[in-house]
Length: 237
Image (cartoon, rainbow, N blue to C red; front, side, top):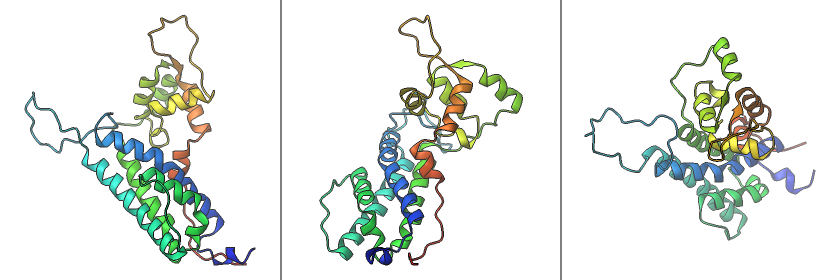
C-alpha cells in the first residue's frame, strides 16, 4: 500500500459504495426537478385533506421534492468545500447538483484523504434515500398474492401498464418505471411482442419477461440505493 493510501479515512468498499451513490445523483436530481414542478405524476400525491374547489388547480410545485433537492445539494456542497479547504485546491466544476456530484466522484481519493470524511458515506446515503422516497414513495395498495402474480406474469402490457402493475408488487419492483422499461428495451434485455400492430399503438411486452429482466439486471439507482455502508475506519495494514 502506498504512503498516500495509508492516510485514507475510507476503505475500498466504502469508496465503491460512495462512488455508486454519487453516480446515481445526477439522475435523481433530474427526477426531483420533474417532481418539483409536477411535470410528471410520481406515486400518489398528497392533498393533506385541504378542501379544493372543483375548478381550482393545485400549484405546480412539490415542496417535498424541493426539500429533498435542496438537502442533497447542501450536503454535496459542504463536502466539496471541506475537500477544497483541506486539500488547498480550487473547484473548477459546474455549480449544478449533478456537476458537484460528478466532481466528487472524480475526486474520491481527495475526499477520502480529508479529515472527517468518515461521515461522508452516511450523509450522502441519507440524502439519496430521502430523494428516492420522494420519487418512488411506498405504495399503500396490497401486494398481489401468488395466484394473482402468476396470472399477471402471463399478460401483455404496454410500458404504462407495467409501471402501474409494478406499484402493486412490493419494494423490489418500486423502480420498474416507464423509464426503466425503456432502458431494459434499449439494452436488449426485453423485446416487444411482435405485431402486426398499428404504428400508433404502444408496444406490448410479456409481463413475466419484464419482471424477470428487472430483477436480473439491477439499475445503477437500485445498486446505489441498496448499498450498505460498512463500519468506518482508517485504512491500515
